[in-house]
Image 1 (tube, rainbow, N blue to C red):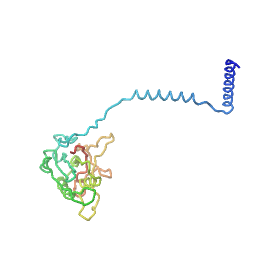
Image 2 (spheres, one colour):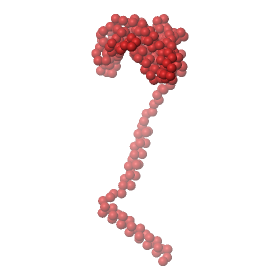
Image 3 (tube, rainbow, N blue to C red):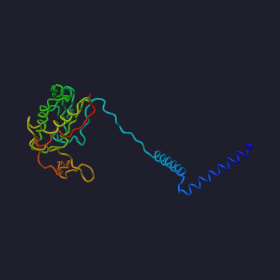
Image 4 (spheres, rainbow, N blue to C red):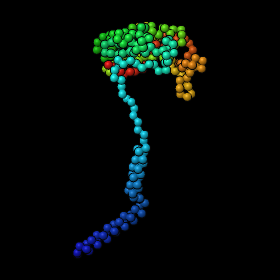
Length: 252
């Protein structure tokens, strides 16, 4: 048998095999999905390319402040015409490994709080092997309570509740929670529980999503946990001290 006859027989065998496969597919009801998969793959690549080319890319400014020694920005929404009793104290609380420092970056309130150069200090109390850092929390709370008493029996603007908290990167989580509790409300006497809940006011939200404004005073409306407008005067024994806590990464 020469080479030409061998090639002819091979082609005939291949053809018979293809015919047999087609016949088996027709009888078995199976469909060759490979061409359809090729089409779907090409379509998906085309769609992804079209979407990627239509995206509008932007940048988010995630740069942290370089130093806490820079003065804090003025309180948002406070104009020069705002009465002093309605302005934020611009108070800063720093948690270090050995001491808590409290001061104001607003020169108008540095006489009643402290300056960054000479802050009020509350020392860390030794606790043996306890991993949490424990400080003179009651002394700190008494100091904040004394500051808040200036608004007793008077309306207190929401801006005055704000405090900036700067935390050392190694501060234990339990210490952070304890400091925040100390800032929020007056602590009960040692060994006793609080007589009642501490009211934490917040700004009401209007239908448009913006802060709700009082039509008479043109000031933000404060509401309680029940969602109702607060009408009672401020009482530091039952209401928050400085619960509007803002975290600052500018600690050094």
